[in-house]
Image (cartoon, rainbow, N blue to C red; front, top):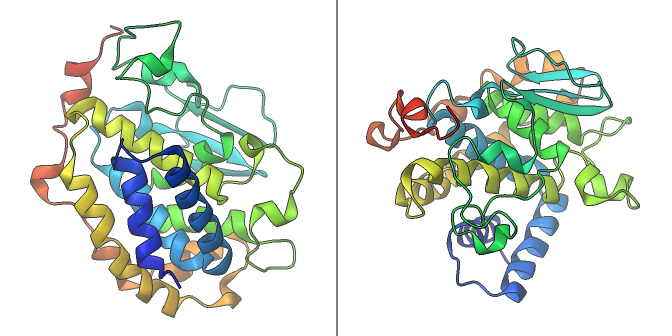
Amino acid sequence: MLTLRIIATRVIALMTEPLLTARQALLVEGCLDDAVRARPVWMGAWISGLLAGTLSTLPPDDPRRHIHARYKGRDFGDLSVDLTAPVTSECAISPRGRFASPEDHLDLIVPEYPPDRLADLALAGAPEQLPEGSATLLAGAVDGWRAAFAAWLTAAQSLGGALTPSDDLEPDVHPSRRRPHSPVASLAALRDVAHRRRAYLGSLDPDWVLFAATGMGPCDEVEHSFQPTWLRPDEQILAMLAPISAFDRWSWPEDALIPPDAYEDFRVDR
């Protein structure tokens, strides 16, 4: 029986080891799917914390830190960014325009092989088309771990107030349209934010691996402290997460942060 820590470690390997085979990658994704279904609070706490933590290392003016998304009538992220796109049930906007397209990576990366993204080592690891549910999850992470986890819980609760994997509720929905807390959306969001960090630092990022691994510890406390009765209107969830001290103990070392002025220094689209 695989423990949650082993499954999370497999996800870290999936995110960082390019020599994994396609079969191994599918195996890890299947394990993640099972874990999200069986222990949504633990996995939600870890994934949302990893997203929020990685975003916090980016320069303050990086567009990834200013995403505004709307999901089922609720807004997430940087509300100062005008949501000017046609408002559907899900959409997301960054200061550069509609978010979640391949063009979102081209402010920091010059394509070497435009016709073939998979042949471009600088772009091959980026999600080709980020599911809108992933963008919503990233927008929730803009405001920190508690806000990201609140977004996860908000998306995960069914009308009856239970935590329900989205695939059970939406079996015929294309993966790109599944809800933010689904494994499909979660992995795409993790890939996107990890790729964004690598755009500044290169593919070798041992600090990210260490942060992802140490972040498993607080999740036990979060799961232990979580009460199903918290599944109430969105505004109440965030307030009820406030007393959980685990959210304050997972942080990056100072030297792992990307310098504040790096975005303007690295931009290629000026």
